[in-house]
Length: 430
Image (cartoon, rainbow, N blue to C red; front, side, top):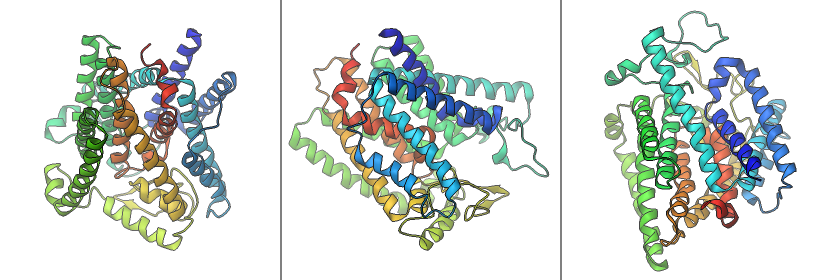
């Protein structure tokens, strides 16, 4: 029924907006208000699964294993109650991704992403304009009370829109320049696919792409600049692979792997020079210190980790005061791979790596196997998962967002959708 499909698309759009801009809700209506929204969304998705009699069989084993390990880690966790809460939110997020993949086709998810990202980008630009032109002062989250000197990281907006040319960075409604940069780059990908897919008009399509590029430039995220380059390279390789036969694709894959390893090695050797070009310090904006602290903790519990927690809980050991720099207490490892090892040990890292590698392999195959004779909508839409996954993986090297909220939802969706791509793609041409 078309009306039911439209309601599911709307639910997906609201869910994606909420997880992409979680701090928008937390800063405006508190964590309790955000929790109420998450609970309502969870109930809505459960109703969708029940009403559609959605089958759970065929879900990737690695995805199920990762969720199960998060839950089971309660047994050995250093903070079992917090682990139980973190595991609950993680399982809900994974379940949301699974249900979305099973009840919406690729075209519908593309629409939902487009709607959610238009709201994130549009509200972010309007928000920063109002703060810079009307308020003319940094804005703190609502419902908070800080004493003494307030660290810059605590501000919702720093009112730097008119200072971008002098090094200022906007944070948008998401309250973080790096997260805004992520949303903006994701928006460029989604809006471009929609434009090529002819699902939006030329004026609207190019207008929203321009808005996303503006937000991306004003956010000034060096991580996302690197991500944009990687996404462009992946796009080029996929389009080239589509024109090659099986043997040519294998050679291209081997060459890409060798080239990728070489590029990473060169980047490490020339790190200081590259960071200088990006306007960043050699300590990667305090990340080196954070990684050192996390690595030390991993050494104390290397096999099973300290227990799953998702967001670091600052009121329990070992996270209480673990990393405090410039008066700011950090609540993530700023690297998803280190974070999963800290929380679930080498076992968790192996399971998570298996999930990512198998998902990447299926997603690349899904994108490359689109015949050139396909109608343009299908060929363009098939690019979305592999480009989004490339973006997520680059972000995972500097942020832990792949393990929670929008990052985990999108990873779960891609993992399931790529496994049942034939059925998921059935509606692409509609």
